Image (cartoon, rainbow, N blue to C red; front, side):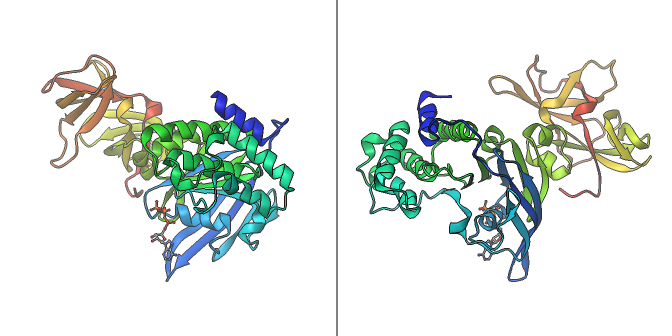
Length: 377
Ligand SMILES: Nc1ncnc2c1ncn2[C@@H]1O[C@H](COP(=O)(O)OP(=O)(O)OP(=O)(O)O)[C@@H](O)[C@H]1O
């Protein structure tokens, strides 16, 4: 952990590294606007000290869900509990959550110190104690020299750091963050991600985070809820989402999978063989299916392998091969692919083939997910 972050964490939780987060339990949360359902039955159990992210495209219901957790938006139905206590009807001020938004929402007429002191004043903390805690927090965040400045006299990154201090200074057990780094440039965003993650870990805070940036979600989260049309498609660890996507949407959303259509050759609970429409067989991880069932096999570009023709594989011709630093991105048109079918996208760190070269493509069975053709996504 960077020294500055360590200092900030210790200033916020003097003399204690104990777990301060609380668990959050969400059941059947729904919200409609003018007859359109925008959150459609969200259920989730978030453990104390867990970092959970809602990830999804614009309009998928991430912010609305977060706003219901915060108490700013009233759900049509469903319930929210903190450490087993129902808070669904509690107003936002009584929930004792911390909020960090993309817009820093600092009070423009107050100095940095006054901004950070504000939540402590609201909570009736004694003046001397406020002075001490604000001083320690700003010092630890490297903001002491800006204590007397107004927010407009700070850079975006400094303002976001003040916003973070203002929330963490009162040590809320649950912090809700909505695209808090969205306005920062890439370098600053990376740095702030490290800081947020370190403080969260050090203090054992429960964080619920909203972003549409996949990389950010993967870096920060213990678990990610992939949202689509107001529903959670899959709530899982980053590795679980990558390695065992439950729907074609998840397979495609994280890391853009290749989809190959075909028919199941075997059947039952442990079926594994898919005869592709283009010819050739892909062996997939075992899944329940019917013999002859039409399916789509999903494989990530980094998981397709170029092999010699002796192995069981699918033949095709290299269309493009572009070296992008640590690896080469290749597109391959499979023999027998129907007109209009997109070529396979493959990423390889090995010796790249040349354009026009004949190749044979396969994948390890654990890297092949199979979905019924009627599954959406
Ligand atoms: N107050 C409101 N009145 C009417 N419709 C709303 C309201 N708030 C949100 N919506 C609609 O609900 C849907 C979900 O919005 P929400 O902001 O939760 O999505 P999001 O996933 O956070 O998107 P983004 O990443 O763009 O912020 C959208 O179609 C939005 O237009």
